[in-house]
Length: 572
Image (spheres, rainbow, N blue to C red):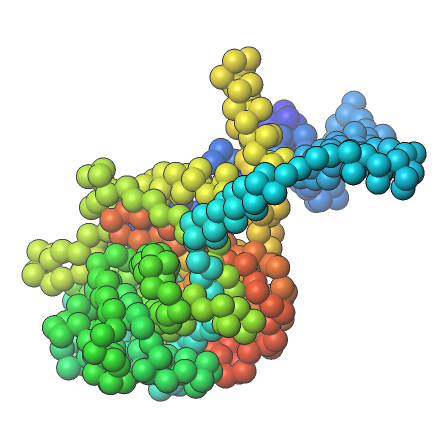
């Protein structure tokens, strides 16, 4: 084998080592089923722009490369370093282009205003007064003009949608007694699945690569051996997480239960009778004319669906407060069978809940934290594969669980592309939209092999809250949206500290950003979540004021320890 082949194999090996989980999974495929191999390897929603081999060689450690592959006598090392001046110039050209396009109105209006000002100075005050007096306007024309102006203003303000504000929110924090370290989880798995060691080994390997930490929590019923997932225990968990979050919200906002006009509760897998929203009405003795809704079966993206529903209701109900509660009840959904595709949720899902107060009152503008800008929802349920990719069913033994299809991540990528295509024109600056348009036209007319332009969403948002559904999802979204480690830090740390709390995870992530003191007035936040059905939903918020570090939140006692280093594999 010549040196070129050796260098090529070395590059290939280094690339595999940079993707530790994928390399390790492929090395030992026996423990993972076809249903879950797609979960580990999330196909990117956009083509990856991998560096060419020449650039990749420059990223390698030269002494290590020489040590691995000593040069022959005839080989010569290049003595001249590559010229990066063209790359630097291209960077500044792009920055200049973005500034020019995004401020095009300013560049057009400033010369016009300057020309008008110079002309007025040239005429002088006497000539200006003479010109004004020469204009003859009768009273009828003046009244008609005033009436037309008032009519247009009235129509504009009446048709303008009401501003929706997020006054405040709270997240549930489980007590220490509910924590489930890795050792406890695996001990319970060995005792519950003692007749199937392969399933135990499978859960251990998933947990090692999950990105979860040692402080995640499960409800009390799951701590028993065997677990006791009965109706009473499920109601107990629902009351614990929902009432705790609502109590904290009332204490923080100073509102009373009678001030709530709209109540929305979303919980995907636990839908008792009476509903969870009725349970809240009964507990806090809410008004009899309250508009209450209970959403179920909508998966991890149901929290943003609730926000969308609250927004629509607040548009038609003036001077109203809406309370939204997002949670997932774990107790009745803990799978005790042997199907690997249905064991995965046991490793990822943990306790959590969030309560939010939304308002359309003008007086709440000054104290509200955020203003709702956009909600974009994408539903792929018309496709049979998308509809059944996250499916609650019974296994061969009659045990109920959530079956994750092997097509899950492919469908998620398609939903994400559709969602981004819709939200892009709403949030991206004009410079990015023009670059995307020019590239699209070029591919259609000139050369179909041109790489599609990936818009830079970092120009549209300062903060990203990606649903903490799993490590692979966060990794691929970071790559394909070209985000920095800090942009996805909130998602990774939420997954590590609290696990996948379903629809409430976005609010734990937002609380992390606030606890780090990074939220400033005018900052824009992009929340994005996936859910069964299959759905991909996005919400865009704009920070309404400088936010101080919150007290009493879920991160209060541990924010100083974060961010933490999360290894690719945690050996158990």
